[in-house]
Length: 332
Length: 296
View (cartoon, each protein chain N blue to C red):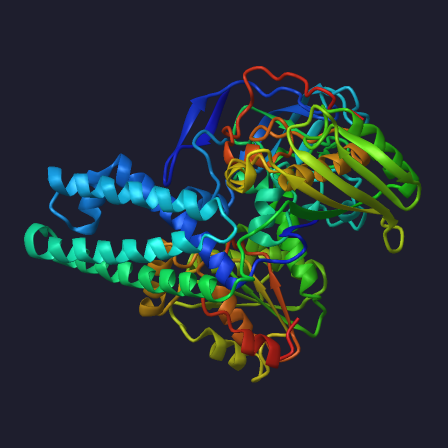
């Protein structure tokens, strides 16, 4: 089959690779009808996530039709239309029992590798480096989906692919970001990053009851979409107003936002060219693996006693984390 | 999960660790000096000609001898003093290169400064080991501990573990023989006759708090037939009983909670630290063979 594979830093190409095979008894094989590129794929492309091998199939946001089932699969049959969530979960370990599927204890056959970097391993993920198990991803014609009775979401009505595909990653990710921020009508929520995940975080915050959501980005088209489609009640373009912390104070009567959501992650852009250059140089020379500018700013902006909700992707260590601000302001 | 190793239950002290480190340093320096003297000359800023290469090989041979001496002994005092003498010899050679054979003065200066730094470390290690007879490098068999929690009842976990360790196909540390068994408390085991490593130890099965299942605590002692140097080499290549124990505990949890050993395209044999060093690309296999004994 044809698949999009990682071929070195800043190189991806479509190649012929073998078709997927059933490896475990509760696998299914899915013929992929729609697949998406995630902002976090850029970190793989730019070479910031370690443990990639040439030939790794990328892609963790996909859906399609079940075409083959393993011997122990009970819930799905051939012909079922499914959206596949990007974390792989066994459904039976302690983490899965707590419904913390993204830290499933059994689904990462490279858990020892991840444990060295993070202290403990996280779950397996489709197409996201060998740290998360080395699973072949979904930017391909077919994919093997493990633990088919646990993860895949069966679509039984006539919703189009485009209407449900984002259940694979960005909608639940944005929703979790908003949920962790504990939104309510009187709170002001500030969201850094108006990309696809940020848009879903904004609209999720509104769905969960927030009435004041501020979107922060530098692309005017994203800020417009945030206002007109996602439900942001105000926006900040940080290229026009570089002092985001002050701007937020002004917009909240001096209080600062009650909860802040980082939907940016490790490749943040800084308005101030010199500081941005500092982070980029350190990242390019691998002295620092992540550029945490949005996270730093979110911590500084958050009102004392508030909540910092992080869904932006980070891989390693950051320089100059404002631990003093975090602790002394009593942030969660 | 939890895992750690010590020697005789005590972590080696700083001076002993430094001595070991210097042994490894000698090994990692000596090898390229002997095998690729031209590259080393270039690196340190010495004009690369026949004489310079010959001297590199001599020094490289000296380093390898020092490595063997230090890593093979508990108290390699004379070898450490030998390193000190070697540093002085190196400083002399570098000085000569400055005068007669230098190519890149900056690199030569950096190399010289490095030798001075190593000289200080060597002097300290040699002096400490001479002055304090109780200081010794790692001695005796390695002791390892590992723990994991499995979400199944204690009786089931204990019974299944005792069954599986007798076979050698699922666990990397197997075959193990159970030599004493106090059900509900501790199981004593040792390597079977055909095993590659000599291992003896104890497995404790206790109830985890709440309804989290069972904690398994493994404590064992192991010695490689190849001695201390062999142990270090094995660890680097992933062939080390502690790493096997960690792999085995993870695989055991998968067997009990999921029913199978979990496979990925990058690690089609399931969790194995050796596999971590040689991942195949994350794309489907040409031919997927069923994993032997992968099922519960």
